[in-house]
Amino acid sequence: MASATNSSFLRSSAILIIWGGIDNDSNIDEEALNAWWTNEHLPERLSIAGFHRTRRFYTLKNAQSQYLVIYEVESLETLTSPAYMDALNNPTPSTAKYMPLLASMNRSACRVLHSVARDDFTSGPQTHNGIGGTVAHIVFDPPSTAEAKEALQKWIINVGWPSLVAFPSPLALHLLEHDNAASKSGSSTKSYEEVRFQTTEADDKGESQGRWMLLIEFAEPFGAPFSRAFTLTDTIADKLNEQDAMDIEVRLYSLVCAASE
Image (cartoon, rainbow, N blue to C red; front, side):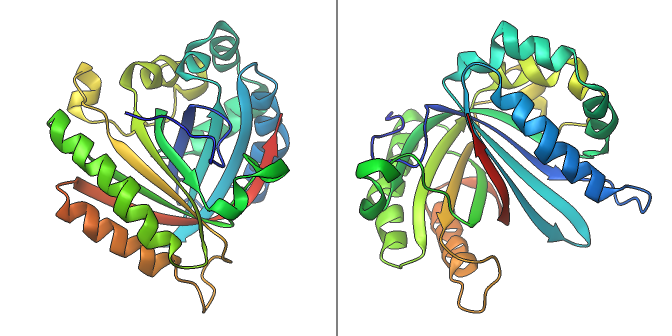
């Protein structure tokens, strides 16, 4: 299967993606939480060798704050490196304070199976620098056989992306595959010991076939009246279901901030 291409917004072949909600507790100082996350935690992670860029996103669902964080890393090996493990096992006082507030988070180390962006943004100095203001995050289980997985990936590349780019706002699409070993190595560290990461029985046994994810970046203000992001994302999710993808979950977020090494 293909990895990140030259015509990509991404800077590397692997991604760490964390998403989920915070506890619905009126005593939580969410402004302070966000100040720590943006001004301390992201720069700390970017100081680790192999971390190239990070982005934070936000949405509100059922009166609960939901966050999505994307780290573009050199490879999956970056996420098991001694430098990263040392940072995870020696959290700063603020990290130890705020990390438990991230209630039912999901944490997934992923390889990039395919990444593509609009032709207008894939030449010259802007290559690998693009960022969409709204991002769709689609999580699903791929078909079980290698042949069906290959067919699904081909559909995403040859049909799904062209159907999106026919509209002006979709900027980029990234297809990711969860890696269970790289994910578990970080999730069991001291930084996350009070965070209830969501896992399946197959994940816990090391038998997971690897969830897939799609990230679709849009050049739209989140929830704008002229936005097509929600409609286009729902259409892609419906088509994935027709292509035998299972347990599809969809959420859209707005960009909070982005930073790079």
